[in-house]
Image (cartoon, rainbow, N blue to C red; front, side, top):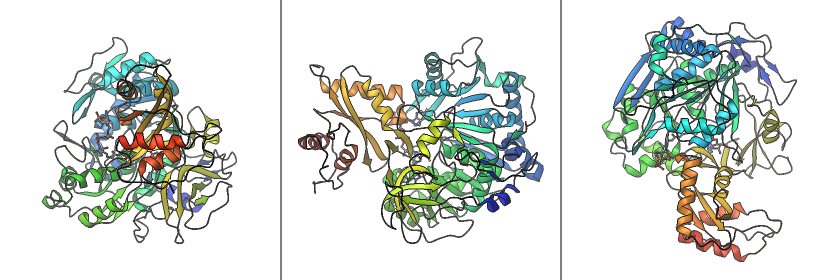
Length: 624
Ligand code: COA
Ligand code: AMP
C-alpha cells in the first residue's frame, strides 16, 4: 500500500540534512525507493540528535551480562563519544562511505558501537551471529567483501567459552576475499592470538583515533546488509536503506510499542538477528529511549528469574523476546515463583515474535505478568512488524494464535496457488501488496535478480513472505507455517536445505532429508534422515554422529542439529520429488493422507517406524 501521507508525515519526525521532496519513487518496481532525494544519517538520528535535544545525560545503553558478572551504562553523550572515536578508527583504516565492515561479535556494547560507527561514516555493516561457524562466516565475507572485520576474542555461553578468533581466522582462510584489517576486542576471559600486520587491538585503535563527524548519505544508501536463511545454502543478503529505516523504526517505536523518549525498552535477542538491528540498536535510540543489551539467557544465568531481575533493576517498560524464551522459563518455573520476588510495576507490555506463539505460552505469560502480551509477526526482510496489535494507536482485543491485523503501511492478502484471494478462514500464501512501506529491504546484496525471483515472481504485484496462514472475518492474520524449507529453531531462522548440503558432503551419504519436527521448548528442531551408499559397512551410529558433528562444524551450534537416523529409502513422488510435508506430518503426529503421487507407499511405513524409534511423534498417529 502506498500510504504516502502517513510516511510523509512520519518523515517530518527525523533529522534530514536535505528534506526529501519526493515521498516514493515506484518507477522501477519492485525496486521501490522511499524519500529518494532526502539526505540523512542514521547515527546522527540515533545519537547527535538526541544529545542536541537535551538527552545527553540520559542513559542510552545498559549492558547487563550475567555470564561475565559485568554491568555498564552509557549516557547518550558517552555513547556518542565512543562511536565518534571508533568511526575515526575505521576512517583511519581507509573505510569510506559505501565500504563494507563485517561485525562478528557477541552481545557486548562494542558491537553496537561498531554498527553505529559504520553508520556515522556511511559504511555498510554486516553483522554475523556468533553462533555461526567458519564456513557460514566465510560465505558472508565473500559476499559482502568487507575492508575491515570487527570481532571479539570470545563469546560466553553458559556452558563454555566460544573462541571467536580461531573461527574468524579459519573463515578468512576459507574465503576468497581477504579483509585488510581485523579489529579485535580482547575480552578478559580469553585473549586472542593476533596476526601481525592484519589484526589490531580495539583498545589501541580507540586510543589512537580522533572522533569524526557524521557523513551525510542519500536516503537510499544502504545502512546495512544482514544475511538470512533461504531455501539453499547460499544465504540472502538483505539490504536495508538509511532514510526509510530511520522513518519506519522511529514511527514503530511509538505506534507499535507505545514507548516514548526516556522509557527503557529491552529486546532480549542478539545483535546478529534483525531484532537486534531494529530494536536493540537503532529503533530505541532513534526514539530517545534507553536500550538494554543483555548477554545471558532466560534460564540458567543464573535462574529463570533473570528476565524479571533485569526488568526490575532497570525499570523496563517493554520487553520483546521470542516465545521460546517464555517456554523455557515456564518449564523451569511453571508457578512463577521467581516472578513473585520482583517489582515489575514499571512493566507495561510484552511483545513476542520470531516464531509462532502457541496459545498456551501466551496464556501463561498473560496470567503471570498481567500486562498485554502481544504476538507480532515480521521477518528479516521487512525489518519491522507486518502484523501487530499497535499499542500506540489502539489496543485491539488479543486473539490467541494471531499477531492481530496488518500494521498501517502493510496490506496483507491470503492467496491460493492460482494467485486469487482465498475465502476468510482458508489457508493460503501470506503475501504483502507492493509497494512495501519504508524500512523494508530494498534489494539483496549483489543479487538484484534473486530479489525479484525469490520474492516478487510468484504473485505479481505482491511480496511473497514465504509464510502460509489465513485471515479471519475481522482481518486477524494467523501465521501457521513456512511454504519453503526454512525452519524456526528457538526463534532462529534456519535452512534445512543448507543442512542437507552439508550432509551430502559425507562420503557415505547417498541421499538425505532434513525436516523440522515440533519441540516443546524450541518450537522446532531439525531432524535428518540419511540413506547410505550401497556397500557401506560403517555402523550407522558412527555415521550419524559424524554428520551431526559436520553440521555443527560447518553451520554452527545454532543449527541445533542433534537428531539424525539412517533409513533404507526416502518417500518420493513418481517424478522423484521428496515428500517433505508428509514426513513432517508423520513426525509431528498430525493427521496425514497417503499422497496420490507416491512412488511406493511402503516407504512411509518404514519411515514411521524409524521416526517412532527416535521418539517422534510423542503420541499415537494414524493415516486417514
Ligand atoms: N555464540 C556461540 N554459540 C551460540 C550462540 C552465540 N552467540 N548462541 C547460541 N549458541 C549455541 C548454544 O550454546 C547452543 O550450543 P549447544 O548445542 O552446545 O548447547 C546452540 O548454539 C543452540 O543455541 P540455542 O538455540 O539458543 O539454545 P540454548 O539451549 O542455548 O538456549 C533458549 C535455549 C530457549 C534459552 C534460547 O534459545 C533463548 O534464549 N532464546 C531466546 C530467544 C531469542 O534470542 N531469539 C532470537 C530471535 S528474537
Ligand atoms: P526472521 O527473518 O529470522 O525474523 O524469521 C522470520 C520468520 O519467522 C517468519 O517468516 C515466520 O516464519 C516466523 N515468524 C516471525 N514472527 C512470527 C509470529 N509472530 N508468528 C508466527 N511466525 C513468526
